[in-house]
Image 1 (tube, rainbow, N blue to C red):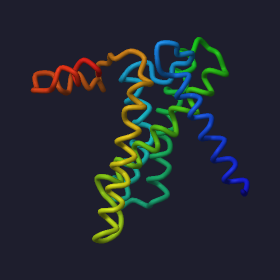
Image 2: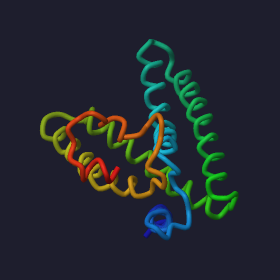
Image 3: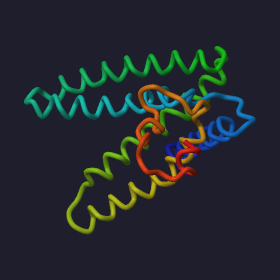
Image 4: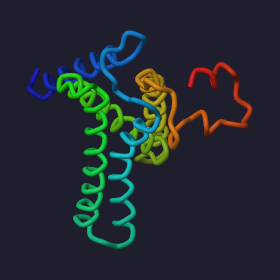
Length: 175
């Protein structure tokens, strides 16, 4: 095994440990405080992608779009870091574990959503890419839902999205 594979395996173990410590009744870290925190965390990679896409589409240089997208994402990431630090009682160890758990999950989820909506390749390759992204999202979304401590939020609350729609009570009650 080379250094990259060892580093990747170690990162996956740390993320798994963060998921285990961040879900359930005996949670010891807060990964996502509420749905607004989850949405803000997901906005970090999404804003970078969409800002660079839109600015490049408008005809500006790619470097300019990367700088603007990076600045907005860095600003949002700073807010996420501050909130996570405060949510974990200013404990640096808990803060680092929560950040190492929430950041890769957000990046992987957003990249797979983009891959699901706009897969690369032609024909069968597009279908394969779309199905891989859907499979990852299918397994990752419930895990992320378990990491949300308070099932509330004013901006990114799934309960408010389905309010007034015909959705089963089991789905509505478990959000």
